[in-house]
Length: 362
Image 1: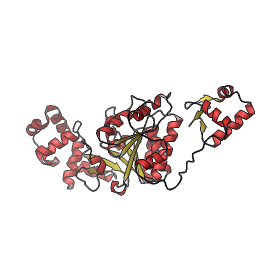
Image 2 (image 1 turned 90 degrees about the horizontal axis):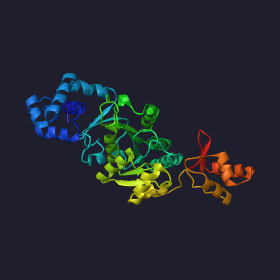
Image 3 (image 1 turned 120 degrees about the vertical axis):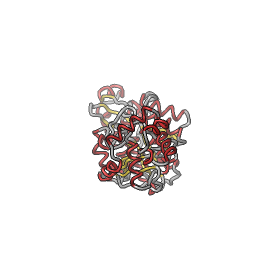
């Protein structure tokens, strides 16, 4: 594809309402994006109708396709189209409504990697969920599996951090354009992704602001880029479960981390396992899914309580936290023994302490 034609693909991506199916309709009718952009209003009305023809005419008054394209490229934003066969992500090309234009930042080439895993979950995870997302993502990344997620707060962000901790590339899929990175608190995380050789990708032009509609659409790209979608923690009604629906439609495998049966944040992931999702009970589960050998132990050793006292105290500590004073009363231990056992559990990394002083179980 020459630069002029690509510039017109970019121009159409700026028109509200011209998604993958309507763009393909334009290509089929006019033969090229350039021809479609320069078509008469009468011709366009026959293909798209009054509303979309009006939207296109409004953009024609504002945009100069070639100038627009050069400005985007000058900002070190790579533009990939479905016609860029050696660069466009192969897995994403397989889905029914592949984005016809992708805007990318980062020195990353899909053809250099074999395995892609989406790691997703709630924006309000428990400490258990955060730890699971970080450890599983880090260990997978250490094996060369590229972690894909949505750069959101909670599980998404922790999945990206796990890959970064492994000094490995990870892919952040945005629900907005690069000029309005959301959430803003992840601006530093986005920069770290780029520094580790990862990729930021969006189907939205750089000037696009985040919206309620853009994030569900973004989710189909997260699953579309991946061989499987791992749900760490998710309520039954959540954006995570929307991504699961996309994954199933796309023929992707759904994986899930089991969680406490009394935790609302684990209701969705537990239900998925009950319905046949691939259960991830350890790092080895991910390696087995991708048929990768477990050659060496990961950095996260599996530690267990060493005594009955440690086991009994651990069982009293909920995943959502408990204050030490309350735990001491429930344990019925001598105070000195209580703090000795508590210290042993902390050293082993089996429990942690939140900012408000509550002890929680990982």
